[in-house]
Amino acid sequence: MTSWPTASVHYVGHATALVDLAGVRLLTDPLLRNRVAHLRRATKVESGALRGVDAVLISHLHYDHLDLPSLQKLGREMPVIAPRGAGALIRRKAGIKSVVELRAGEEIAIGAVTVRATKAEHDAGRLPLGVEAEPLGYVIEGDSRSVYFAGDTDLFDEMADLSSVDVALLPIWGGGA
View 1 (tube, helix red, strand yellow):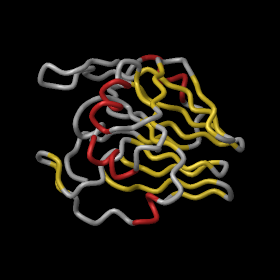
View 2: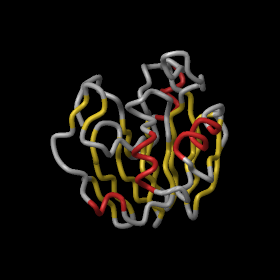
View 3: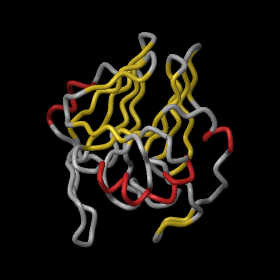
View 4: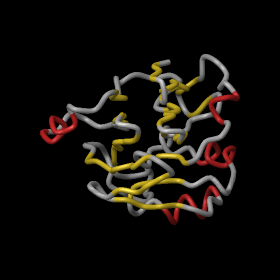
């Protein structure tokens, strides 16, 4: 866990992290089950990681990043921020009431933080024959601190513009939660 006086980042597993910045708690790509396809969780999810979450950030539609049963565990009232085009799927299949869809460059205020969607280079589809939505990363800013959650992106030229963030949560191309 990385901590600042008013912020922390807690690794939950796979691409799931709890970002606590300026008193706002955001959960990235929640994968909360013990097993999803070939991924197996090595340890249980700590209950504290799920308490007081203000919103969820979804980077893309692959099953290991948009796990609908994990979203359901968080409750129908949990606000979800997702790529444009993912909202209908999340509402219909997970029963989530509040889904905000963003494109790269768009932002939303959640409490005292700003969440800005960034470009991500990754496959856009939910296979097989599923919905497509452009993958995103997110920069979370508040209390003069910033966290970049990259999702499953490959490198891209504009990533250099993100070099001023305090913490970057980057994919490492591995399996397991």
